[in-house]
Image 1 (spheres, rainbow, N blue to C red):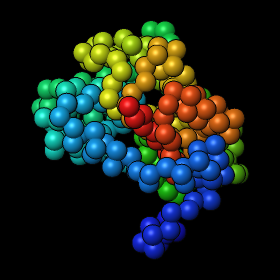
Image 2: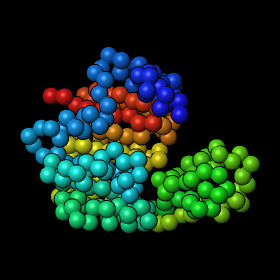
Image 3: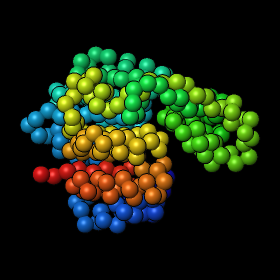
Image 4: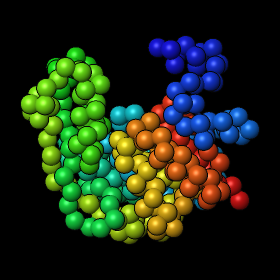
Length: 257
């Protein structure tokens, strides 16, 4: 509600964004006020087609900044790789784009080596009843402690036994980003990279750095990162020539020739 009122009044300042990522927020007032959707539109307005990678695509519709564009303007994308490890979300994702030939949906997660890892998720219906709020299947993590933190945030009295009943570990396939790009026929780097992985975003960006993959445009969720990791990732991207901006939830950056 407060954010909607601020937007209606044209207020740009965000105390949460400043507190969460001062390394970006204190710099961005010197930069053009370019929001991520505007940067995507600028990329699509060029003469060349763009490639896109989304790590943590969920179902392609829930809080998705590019899902509508992929369906409405397919001719402007050369290829898109949408990565989602959760079975139910992946099922909806692959059905959504079943008739779009240049979109490759991958049921996996990104890691340094191929194999399997346990992904921790919540029993959505039971957790929603317990917390008195709708729990989406966007709540998934390789870190069980992240789900414990979410449950304790909304229900401080929850017992360990109740948490054990709500949290499930499911093995999911994992593979390096370079292998995933090769499967989708995308030569690195992609034009646009989106990352939304419930706190694993920093690891994904470090893997990008190890593979020397630097897209023209990147967005990642920083609100679940620890303060020292937010600073580290910000400095890593700044060192690669990105101009960065952030709001309370996400950070995004672009490189200019």
